[in-house]
Image (spheres, rainbow, N blue to C red):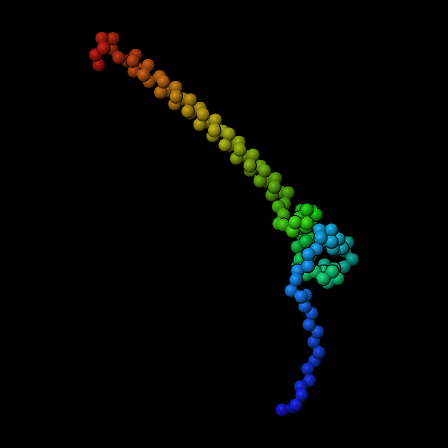
Length: 131
């Protein structure tokens, strides 16, 4: 066995295990670079030291929800979904109103029927008091 072994040189790059925190303005500036079409998203990501999938996520959030979404890094609900939910809420509120009105009408009818029963019962008795 030889006394020495030749090894090729490797460069190991580590990020120190820390996440970089980027301001909303910086995220927007980086995303805007991807929109001009001069460089690919991967090239822009490499230039700024950002993972391409993260840059794709920022871009998607910005295109769907604008700068507010990128700032908060939250999922975005599309305008179409919001409109559908608002329409559904209005329909449910309308149905609730109708059911509430029906319940009130039935409650009044029940109260009236209870108040009329003794009167109808008294009127149905024979005049001589026998049953």
